[in-house]
Image (cartoon, rainbow, N blue to C red; front, top):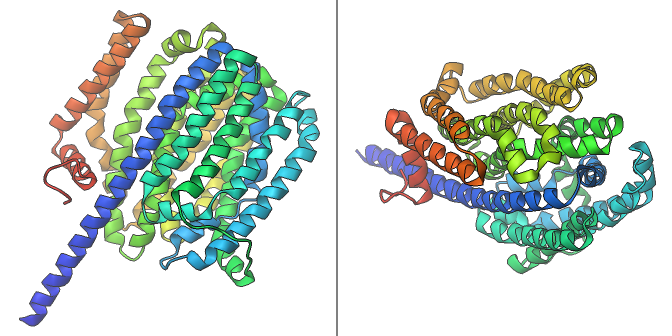
Amino acid sequence: MTEKYFDKDLEMQEREKDAALASRTVKGGVWVFALKAVQRGLGLVRTIILARILSPSDFGLMGIAVLAINTLETFSKTGFEQALIRKKEDPGEYLDTAWTVQLVRALALFLLLFLGAPLVAFFFDAPRATSIIRVLAFIELFTGLKNIGVVYFQKDLRFNKSFFMESTGLGANIFVSILLAFVLRDVRALIYGSLAGAAATCIMSYALHPYRPAVKFSGKQFRELFYFGKWLFGSSIIIFLITQGDDAFVGRFLGITALGLYQMAYHLSNAPATEVSHVVSRVLFPVYSKMQNDIKRMAKAYKDVLFAVSVIVLPLATGLFLAAGDFTRLFLGQKWMPMVPAMKVLCFFGLSRALGSTVSPLFYGLGRPKIETQFSAVQLLILVIIIYPLASWKGIVGISWAVLLSHLCITGVYLLKASRLLDVGPGEIFSVLKPVFLPLGMFVASVAAGLYFFSGYAGFLLTVFLASALYMVVLKRTDDLAASRLGRIAAASGFSKKGPV
C-alpha cells in the first residue's frame, strides 16, 4: 500500500515538474518571440526607410564588410556559451576562463580585420570596403567585453532580461542609422548604427547582470569546455559556408550591386525563418538539455514545437511568395524590383530552413552535435556542386535555386533522424503538419484574392490582416488536435485560465 502511494507521489512530482518546465519553456519562448517580433518589426521599418534613401550598392558594400567579420567570427568560434548552458551544475567557476578566451579572441579578430581589410576589398574589387571593415572591426571589441554572466539568461530561461538587453542595442542601431541616413545619405549610416548597437548591448549586459568577469585562465576548464564546443565549432564553419558562401559568390562574381539585391531578397524572404529558428534554438536547447534522460518527454515537446513552427512559418512563407512583387514595389521602390524573382524562390528556402531548425536543438540537447556537422557537410557539398552552373544560368535567381535545393535534400533527412532519436515513427512526426493544410489553403486563396481586388498601401495591409484572421479562425475550429495543441501552448504560457497542463 505504501509503495502505491509512493509511486503516485513520484508520478505527481513528475507531472508538476513537467508543468513547471513547460510553463518556463513557453514563457521563455514568448519573451524570445516578443524580442524577435520587436526586432523584426523595427528592423523592417529601418530597412524600408534606408532602402528608400540608400542604393543597392550601399547595402552591397555593407554586406562585404559583414561577410568579412562573420567569416573570422565563425572560424574562431569556441562554442563555450553552449557548453556552459548544457552543464547541469552551476557553471559559475568556468565563467572567468570563458570570458578571458572571449576577450583574447575579440582582440585577435579586431587586429585581423583592421590589417586584412585591404585584402578583402581587393578580392571583391571594392576599394571603399577597406575603411568600412576597419570601422566595423571595433564591434569585435564591444562583443569581447560583453558580460559573460548573461549566459544565465538562456540557461535559466530568463529571456525577459535578454529582451531588454538586445532591444536596447537594436534601438540604438535603428535610431543612429535612420538619423544619419537623412544627414549623410550613404553607407556610413549603416556603419555607425551597427557600432552604436554593439556598444549599447555591451553596456546593458553589465547593467542587467551582477556578475563581474575577471581575466583568469584555467587549462583544465578550457579543455572541458572545448570538448563540447569542438563539434559546434565544426558545425558552425559548415553552416557559415552554407549560409554565407552564396553571398561571397555573388559579391565576387556578380558585383556589389547584385550582392545588395541578393542580400535584401534573402533578408526579407527569410525573416520568418530566421526569427523562428532563433527562438527555437535559444529556448529549446537548454530545455532539451534538462530533458536529455527522458526521451518520451522530449518526443512530446518536439511534436508540439514542430506544430507551432509550421503554424507560423507555412502561411508566412506562402504569403511572402504571393506578395513579394507588391511589397517590394510599394515599400522599397522600383530600384529593388530586380530582386523579386530571387525573393520568391528564397521564401521556400526559409520554410525548409525553419522546419529543419526544430531538429538541431535535439542534437545539442542530447549531447550529439556531431550529427548536425555531418548532415551540414553533405548539404555544403551539394551546394558547391550546383551553385556555379545555376548561377551561370540565372544569376542571383539561379543561386537562390541552388540554396533551396541543397537545403531541401537535407530537411527530410533531418526529420527522419528526429523520429529515430525520439523513438517514434516517421509518420507520427509528419502527421503533425496535417492540421495546418486546410487553413493554409484558405489563407493562400484569401491573399491571392486580396492582392487581385485591392491596391495601394491600405489594400495591402487590409489583405494581410483579413487573411491572417481567417487563417487563425479556421485553424482553431477545423481540427481538434490543432485546438488542443494551441490550448496546451497557451496554458503553459499563462494565457489560459486553466493554467499549465
